[in-house]
Length: 279
Image (tube, rainbow, N blue to C red):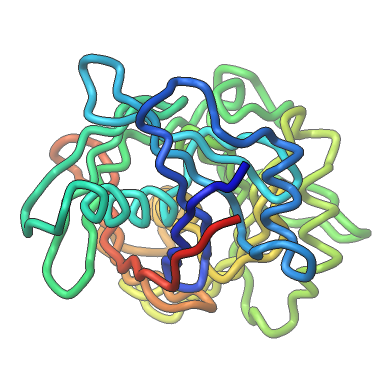
């Protein structure tokens, strides 16, 4: 069976988008997603995103398969790509159009902006240890600047969930981080029973952060929207940054706001079509 797809990327974080609107059952299995994401023998991507029917209260449902076949609860760059893909399926983009997307972490609201940008209401951060989840500290307390031994070194970490788990650590120099080694060590650390996404942050200014990210199930990626949101939350909690921040990732910049008024995170960034095809 041939599957039509569209390739998008958000700051280099790339995805295979599939129109799955006629069925609640995924058109691809986790095993097929692994093959499709392979950069040598498949299409190549950081994940497969399916646009499924809505729930009755939402316009659409999003499901994602990682390159290892696992299913993350949420993906910030992915949902921006999905918003553009849906607009394409509906016949064209309308500036200011907002979609309601059901995800495992709740309903997310991406809004189409000028020049290919998408502003996404990402919801509230979760901060208690059992919400991450992590076994660091008391389950009903926050994990802020807690020591964690990884790869023979003690790191000061802050944990935030954006529906998916993140461990953030602030460093003096990102160029000194061996992401390939440390990313895996953090991801599979015994303190994180569901594995973890890890962000290494260098503070340039209170309103400007530089970030390297290791995503569970995907490895080193050029960008991570939920990770950028979690990092700003961690930065505010540790007094490292402002509530409105530019986050520079290897693939480009995201604008992140942690609103004091409603406690929600707002992410603004691009999504770009790369090509279409049949697999």
